Length: 79
View 1: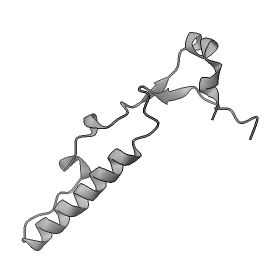
View 2: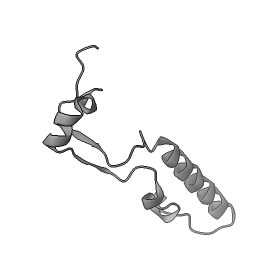
View 3: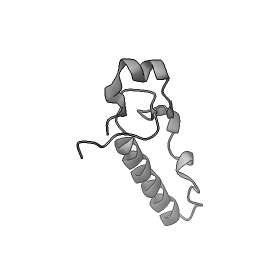
View 4: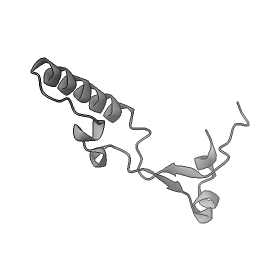
């Protein structure tokens, strides 16, 4: 894997590596609220977005990197 490089310069906007922990918390909250709602006879939430706020996750999405940034920091294209 010594020659493994990214093909497209798309990266996250912040320094967070991933949103895995945020997604885990959101899914756990969704399942918990669903179980509680079903047990009490109410309508369960229909989406994860009803339970959690995706804007509070660690990473703020992805976007293309500028050529100047890639020229300055070539290690960004490493996997």
